[in-house]
Length: 218
Image 1 (cartoon, rainbow, N blue to C red):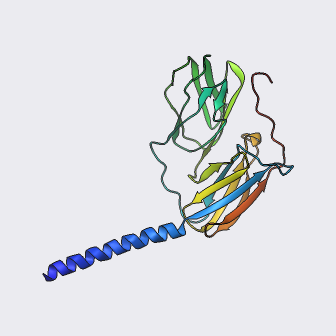
Image 2: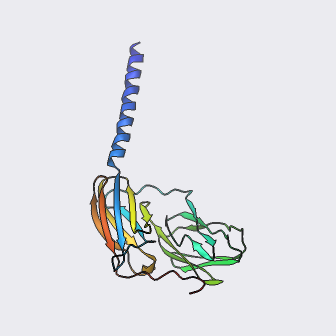
Image 3: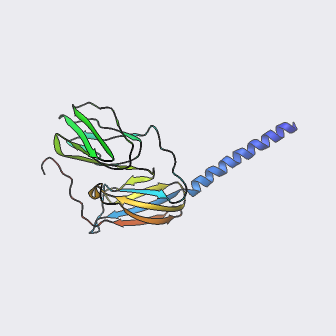
């Protein structure tokens, strides 16, 4: 009976520790709200904000991470994609026309030769950080941007220029903001901030007005 008492006490202690750990993890999580604008103060969409903690490491990448950039209505969709290095991307063709997907970028050079509607070629693994610009060699206005990152803490801005970053804990972070108009050469904007609690806020203002996305008529 004494052994049973000890066993039950130890079990309750372990459960309590587990619950407390969960509570602490929830309490430590932090939200950072970011507002992005162009040089005129207008909201900037299709920008990526990403965070890197200045202390501690990053969690291991998801070995099964995969996403999609389709060809639809004679455009790549989505136009901007942010991923962590090691992620696979599929390029399905939903158009009536054939497409030929190609990248000349140093971060990932690849080619998917001409394929028809309804075909999804084997995925491409993006294993190096950087900016990858994707083209269709048959339709020169078609373009997509892939930002490949080390960190898993990133999000893309909405049409109102807002971004919500879900961060794992309070602490000091390097926050960076990138837009396709910066391309692969110009550096992302960056700030260092101390994140604490649920209501952190930052603002980034870029020094340009975004050029409209090219289409078949332009």
